[in-house]
Length: 270
Ligand SMILES: [Zn+2]
View 1 (cartoon, helix red, strand yellow):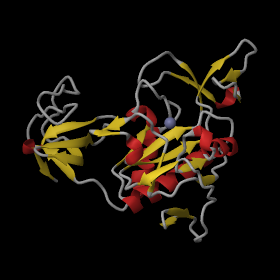
View 2 (view 1 turned 90 degrees about the vertical axis):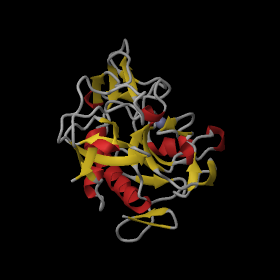
View 3 (view 1 turned 60 degrees about the horizontal axis):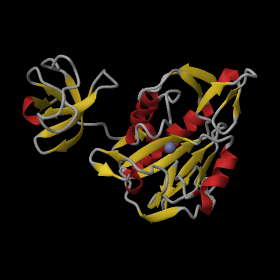
View 4 (view 1 turned 120 degrees about the vertical axis):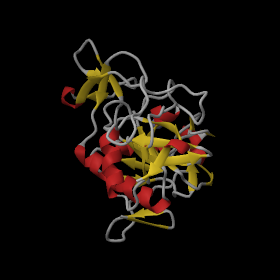
């Protein structure tokens, strides 16, 4: 895949289907990729809704369960997918991100008739339901799984966007609006997805190791809580995600969930 004039093209140069949404803001220079589920009943109905002015919502892409891709907004214009949100000191992530909606009913509960339905009454076959708790809290509930065709499509789209726009990170709507949003939710294999997408990227993050036992913190300063009970041991491998003065936001290699801030005076490049 490729990008031309901020529109996604297939490998053979044909544009992916484009249905312009009027729900669009000003010029965008994207830095992040935000993953969502639609919570709807089909990609077609979600495209119809997200291109309806009444929705006051949109996304750059909708990816169906069959892997089909529809673009609704050029990638250099703001789409209305994130709402009230923040990440890494940025507020209002619509102004900083590309949004991908995956056709998925979201969280579903088992009804008296034995069928799994979401809040809108969309029925999901039991074979498509996993029962999990959300990482942000709450009880175990049902979630519709994503299809492999859909994930493969999304990986291709995400890789193309990450490379073309040099995006910093893939995040979930539930990362940037926790408490308010639960998508893409626990059925979305975020670590697998990131791994596959980043594995296709041309560039890799700069690698560092710690030169002493070193605390990893929730923010860029000693005032932030430490994220682990014990400091990272000397020689721990880190990937640099971003730098802010003397502080570096890093991913701890081999611990896919552990990201945080370390003091740059106590690491060295590999
Ligand atoms: Zn969302």
